[in-house]
Structure formats: structure tokens, C-alpha cells
Image (cartoon, rainbow, N blue to C red):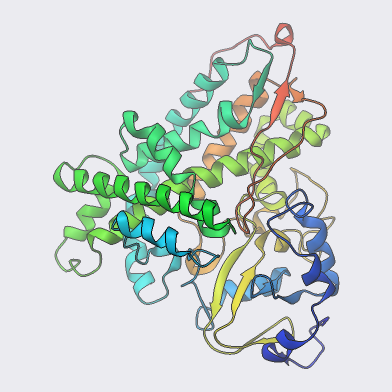
Length: 442
């Protein structure tokens, strides 16, 4: 079942009946060794089988840069409708939990297609990522970063996930959403369950527990939206409500749409940035020369962020449904079939990124990555994530240039198809060698 651009297109239906390809047999996104190192498999896929069918997932897997780009850009052939549908069909007990919570999660921006997606996106974009709002939050991000570093800088060791990268993006995202400080812990706990519930393959028992948590998350998000309907403040949800109430927009949103949007943006606003930050710090610690170069020249931080997003993205795959028969990489995918577009593999495509397996924070074209998607569904939070990651790198390299990985540690990853980052990242240093503190940037 190998394919190449020079071959005549083959039908997906026939391929689905042929013997399982050697890559499909090895592709298991929920277990090691894939969780530890997905990139080795994708290097092989791009070379030998850039488009293959996975019977275990019932998805077509697309791995090359140009093919992934085609899937994202051709919105007439590929629908986003299944993007956040649970990968595993819900069991009866899980459905009961969602019914008990009266959860009626409808469409949101991430799984909508034109023209509705186009009509709604401009209001959601303006409410969330206006340049003024992004600039407002920049000094707060730096303040958060230094406050958390203060908490461990004299200790000589830290877990850069639990002590740093997990907390700050959550605080920033929740502040933008208008989540009160007293609700932050509860909101983090709820939103943290979304990845495994939606993109994982949990057992029925796990799925039921996750569904109960999702029901609680839905209830909380609904309470928050209703609170802002009554008492608007200067935050994202209040701005979206204002847009909804503008003359002519009454049919554009409803309350359930606002609740669904709240849930998805709370998750995306912190989970992805947390994972991207952890991935990046791990790559820098494992490639010591790159970390030393960053410490010596902080102006490299912005491009280091782009290389991190390329080399070890926090979002490595996204899903689409084939609307009409389409040829991708020489393979005909029939209407109704499902596609896993592996952005993490595209970001390592040697035809676009020479020496793609090398981590290089000076890479000239690093920004061509698909970490934030491309086209109509380009991530609205990309600018905010870039600013957060840049500030994190600037402050950690300034205050802890001598930190290093704790030897012998193993890294665990959530067993899902799409979101990737180490659950822990332990580092250590000699506090007596800490740089003398100068005035902090504002």
C-alpha cells in the first residue's frame, strides 16, 4: 500500500480492504514507543507511505507537508466538523453523565465550516486577540513568570511543568476569560480533562469518569457565561456577549454557543501553551549548545519559539472529514472517510525544513510550521502563545542559565492523538551560582 505522487490515484475503499500496511501495524498513538517518540514513525511514513489507512482508528493518516497543507486549505473537500468529536464513541454510562449535566455542546469555531465559521470568526477574533488586549497582558505575563521563578530559584530544583508551565498560561487565559481568581483551580481541573476525553481512547470506566468531569466543566462554564450576561466586565466573554447583543447579530450566537466557546478556549488557552513550553524547555536542555546560545543572546528567543513549535509542537495532529472524494498524495480518499492530518510530521518534512531532525533556534524558515494550523482555522491564540513562550524563555535563561535536566528521569505523555507535552520536567542547579539579580524588565 505504498503511494507516490507519480502513481495513479487509488480508491480509499479498495485500500481499506487490502492487507494492513506495515506502518498501520506499527501506528499506535496511545502507547509507547509512539508516545515517547512519534517522529521516528513519521520520518518513515513520509518516505515510504505518506498516506496510509489505520484500521484501528478508521482514519486516513496524512504525513507530508504539502499534503497536510492541502487538507487544511481545501475546505470544500475537507470539513472541520469532527475536529472535537470524541475519537472513541461514548458508552451508555458516559452519555448518562452528560445527560445528567444537561450538556448540549453544539458547534464552536474550531469545528465549523464556512459560511457560518467566517461570519462568527471575526467577532471571536476581535473579542480575544485585539492588539490592545494582547499588549495589555504582556507585562502581566512577565510578572507571573518572575513570581513563579522567585518561588524556586533558591531551591536548586524544580519541575518546570507543575512549578511553572502549567500554572502561568492558565492564569493568563483565565484572566482574559474573566475567570475570578477563586475559581482558577476549579477551572484548571475541569479543562485539563478535555484532551483525553476528546482525543484519547479511554476505557469505558475512564470515559465515564471523564464524562462526569466534562459535565462539571459544562456546568461551570454555563455559570460563568450567565454571570457575565448579568455583570459584564472587561474580558473576552463579555466582549463576545457585547457582539452578540449588537443589532443584527441576534441569530449569530446563542447561550449554548457561548458556553461551548468558553470551554474550548479555556482549554486551548492554557493546555497547548503549557505543553509547547515544556516541549521547548526539554529540547533546549537536551541540546545544550542551543540553550547556551539563547542565554548568551536573548534576542534569539523569538525565533527559538518558532523552532520549538516546529520541532516539538504541542499539537501534533488534527482531524478532518472528507466531504467529497479527494486525491491526497496520490491516494483517493472517499467522501465520508476521516483524516488525521499529522502537523507534527509536516513540521519535520525534509523537503521544507533541511536537516529537520536537528533542533536549531536560528533556523531561517522555522515559522513555516503548522503548529497553529493554517488557513481558515489558524489558531486565534497564536500571538498570545508566542508572547508567553518568548517571555518564559527570556526570564528562565536570564535567571537560571545554569539549570540542567535531572539525570535518569523518564517522560510521560497523555495517551491521545493530538496534544503532546511531558507531564513533568525536572531540572536542577546550584543556587550559589545564580546570577546576581538586576532590575527586571517591565
